[in-house]
Amino acid sequence: MTLFQDRALVALVGGVLALLVVASIAGWILSSRITSAPGRATVDNINARIRAWWIMALVFVVALTTGRVVSILLFSFISFLALREFVTLAPTRPGDHRALFWSFFIVTPLQYYLVWIEWYGLFSILIPVWMSILLAVRTTLAGDTEHFLERTAINQWGLMICVYFLSHVPALLMLRIPGYERQNAKLMFFLVLIVQLSDVLQFVWGKSIGRRPVAPAISPNKTWEGLIGGVGSATLAGAALWWATPFAPYQAGLMALVITMMGFAGGLIMSAIKRDRGVKDYGAFIEGHGGMLDRIDSLCFAAPVFFHLTRFFFAP
Amino acid sequence: MIAAALAAGSRLVCGASVKWHCDPSVTRQRIYFGNHSSHLDFVMIWSALPPRLRQSARPVAGRDYWERGVVRRYLAGKVFRAVLIERGKGSDKAGAQAAIAHMAREMGDQYSLIVFPEGTRSLDGVVGPFKSGLYHLSRLRPDVELVPVYLENLNRILPKGESLPVPMMSRIIFGPAFDTNGSDDKDGFLLRAREALTRLRDAR
Image (cartoon, rainbow over all chains, first blue to last red; front, side, top):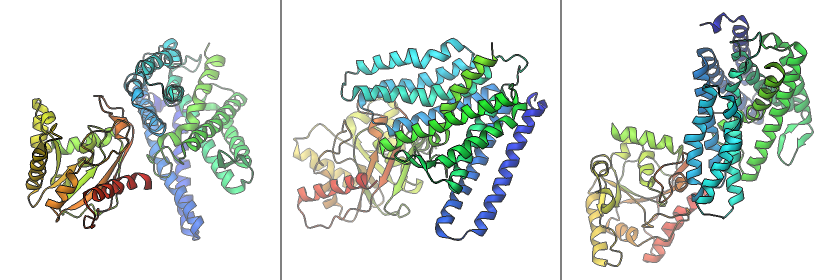
């Protein structure tokens, strides 16, 4: 494998695995030390998360190192599961059936096929332009006007968040960055790692010193202390990983800052939708993490912004 | 083999999570009665049963639909071993009585049944009034346990009139056994049975 000859990638993968080993040991020590009931619940939750992390990290690393096809297939599958959770939660009516069927079985595969053939022009407008029109037409033809505006919006938003936004992660592979040819897998790694690190660090900072909630009406667990601590430390981690990216250290730090801010906003937006529907999680797909969509909400909103900033500034 | 693959496949498409309020390991004869909103309904109840119970559970279905075409006839006859009944004779009392007697007979001393007392599929997922068949069946077979099964979201996955499924997630909730010994008359019995079913939906 040529990818394994890439020292930076090997270092990234090794670093993540080392981090997980440390986390597992820490979790094991915590679970033998803490005995109070509320403390136990938190520790059990953390350990379930760490176990799920192992699986997610292994799947992602395998996809990344086996090549483009596997990465694209992996993310199309994640889109499919996320869209499923999104649509299940949102109220739809029989008149939406055909448009939804298209969304799952035609639009989603087509979007990722465009990533595969690297047709950037159509990739970037398929869902926001073509499907936004065609699916609205299909729903209109079904002739049901009850809650029409909400229903069409549900389908559009589901596709935008779960498919369009997320497809920008493997789309990073189609960028042509001078001096960084055939190394784009590390860009994907950088994005996913920073988003997830930021999630974890916000959780850790929030649990330890979190006092003042940012948006108490939406999510009481997201605090200013967690936000500033998490974003700050994830930004520093991003800057420290500059050697794996085409960026200078300060550029890598700025990118990480934007990624983490977008991730935070994404988590808040998806929490607002959950609040509206009266649920806590989108599903129970991953133990300790809720559903797929609960896990990738930050990534969905960070991916397109990171993609376009990189494309605008680094891929002429 | 076909049965196991079909059960696994339909659970996957319907993203089904199953919840039991009665004991799934007890192998006594039961009548599972569910709300009807999709062609997937009986397949999903059947798939959600543990393999041992599945082998002895037979859906009650319309002869007109299941004897059309080779595939349906094979599935109804060999895979589901459906109890096929005549339909479309709602006003014919003798015909209805014969159908109930046929179901009771087909149960023998080992089979369970899967029935949908509303008689027809609901369009919007609202549980309609029960027809009297469940009452008469229970009177003919007082030895058999009645178990309500609430099916959530299947009307959104494959609504009436559609042939292709949208793979949303569904829930199948098996309720506690329904008390058939109440001293109520037919209408009271049917109201209570319907309530036992809708309670599963509301409890979540």
